[in-house]
Length: 210
Image 1 (cartoon, rainbow, N blue to C red):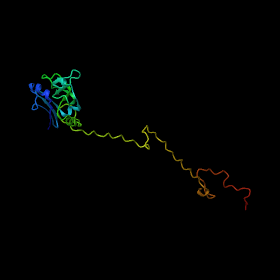
Image 2: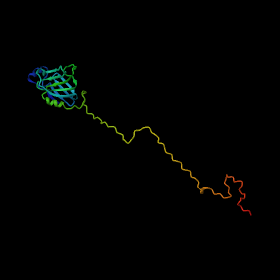
Image 3: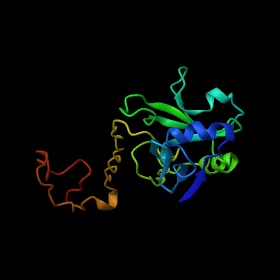
């Protein structure tokens, strides 16, 4: 925990003491999880992840830097003990604290601490969580999206299948018989199925009679 004390200007310290605001009851505590402010009877606590940023401001008008008061412009609250310098702390989500009912929420708070630059530098560090819930959230690694694979151009888009007609081979030509394949007949052998002429066996004109 890091504690920052309020700075008290001499003319303002006396009236603040009547309100219960003294160097022993006014301080700002910063831990790893939250920001806690005590200003006498007033207090404000918020998660450190709810702090959006911090800026060193000042000097202020003395009547605006005295005590605890709410700005009518933006409802920001000031816990002032000095008019020299202070730190304006901005919240991501408004926080109650200036009035006892808690109905008024404050988007920012100004505290007149003795080391404003150191407090602003500490609160300006990048928060590690989402605003609000009181829990310090760890960073979540986002998965890297893998681009879709491109199909090779050699593959064609699937479509209706068509059957390619097969070529039929031409029938082999019939072999014609050669004379050598023809059956040989003798003079006296009759060919089956052939009727011999009627004059077969009769003598011709050239036959020599004895």
